Image (cartoon, rainbow, N blue to C red):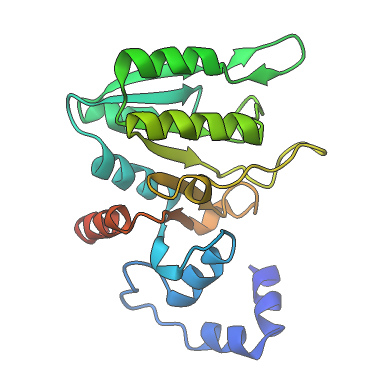
Length: 224
């Protein structure tokens, strides 16, 4: 906290925000300045394309907005539990797409994913890249291929990008899901992992799809 306060003191504008901070009810979508700062991490994203949530809350509300009983959802596993368990609790059929162990690295089996798409035509695909806990990565070509599958099947793509910025040295960083798939791509980000600030419980959901953003913010009104 001392480090954060020292950073605030380096800017009169930020210091004033701390000094005048209200502990009353906050803006439900997130502080406008925070939404603006988050938007700069993406391409052609505006503050209106950003919703501020605790990361777990963002996952929960996204699943409520995207899937229902009877839908199919493919989830790359192993993963953070709520990335599959919330959909399962809603009655969604969850197909677990397991990361494979190769001779020298873990990898995503895209041929297997295509078979799952053909047999299930999913409403939603959930990825975790960079992958926790294996460290598996996709190339940009692989991610573009995945987006092509999603477009072909009119499937939503939700990517947990909490470990973005912690890629191995020399591993190219992928484009964000919300940027590479503007129609139905959703990016989850936050301060817990790559920023090392889990106690702040600050994360965000980003998408060009305004209908989706409006829906999860409306759901937040009922939850927070």
